[in-house]
Length: 134
Image (cartoon, rainbow, N blue to C red; front, side, top):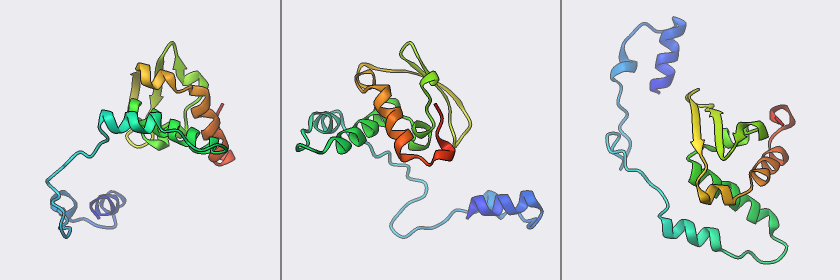
């Protein structure tokens, strides 16, 4: 709602100030409480070591992309637009889609263990052709 009001003000459709003071009240959720939800190291390790049944290679690859996101902190939208040229000498250089921030992410041993080729091949396979970048 706040985003919409800010957009309307920028376009001249609305000239109030509500977008600066609006605080939604959601049932059972405090807007001010910003509890961070994450997987513990143990949970990540369980997921990483999980053995899929035979013929489930696709699930293994999806898991690998998810773990790559966890280990790098990248959003799906940013992983989806990764190109081979974005990764050099164990460092990912990417401009985020949501905030347009330039990031330099050193790949740790966990994210390096997941082949960037797997991540990119999945993105090419599952993203629309118009967004495919090599």
